[in-house]
Figure 1 (cartoon, rainbow, N blue to C red):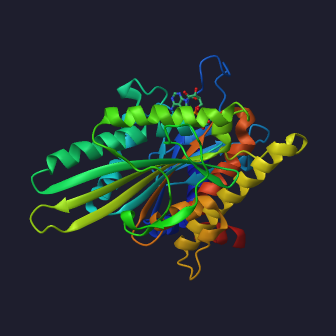
Figure 2: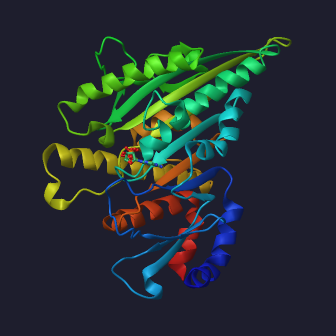
Length: 361
Ligand code: ADP
């Protein structure tokens, strides 16, 4: 089949990529068609292999040129459940209780399913909870299991980065104040925004906080349409564990990042506030790509300071920290252009070397 032909051509490069993977994993998730959408069932996703390959077909082209294969650590089909998505993420979440730092990102164009993956469609339905709530539920569960040996404390921060300004989403007075990024001695000297750090001990605590967060996020939305898709939201879980025998303390943190929509803005649309937003999003997403690429290449200089996003995450990108990116695909034909640029970004993040090898061909 054409899939196997294209795959064969990619085999060599693909093996090279597999060898390089480790510090960063990239998972791709294709969202299903929504009810009432595109009844003819045509999709830009031609094939999803169990081996982590996804083949995209260009609706406007024919033959071999119409198809392109991208390779990731894993590709989830449209019917993957929230539970299945989380199972593979679980070891990374659990490593935070052993003192590791980790970042989980959701990347993709607006409407591709980022919030669905991270939060889920409905706070009140545990079955469809996304990675955020499952991670916290898991952390609470394991810390209870280990309670005889280690006393854990879990606390959370939630911030939003909009137009290169960092704001606290957990302030209860709705003041929505701007934050500076500071070295925080309470948090082991991490460079973190000086945002509310709220202790939590059960999922109900978390749900109550999320309601405050959502309300604070909506405050800005009255002034600017769809603010949530134009800003990055970062939920950070800090874990502190004291060994009851040795009294030693370990600290770990997990950043759960719902990134701003990656879509390029139409030239005609790009004026005023919209242009400013687009430029800021562009800048911070490419800064993120640059940092991850530099880490993959083991560069001397990692350009963390090029955006607020990479500054906030600095202590959890690189070093011994683990990174996972969920790349989201909207399978509709009219999303083809964005789908290709999303996959190219993801491929660059997964392995800079692959991009270099390809352009030499
Ligand atoms: P984004 O955060 O990327 O803008 P959303 O998460 O809001 O996108 O998803 C857009 C729409 O698609 C929502 O109505 C959401 O419920 C639905 N959706 C996204 N992913 C899935 C999925 N895996 N299964 C079912 N519905 C989904």
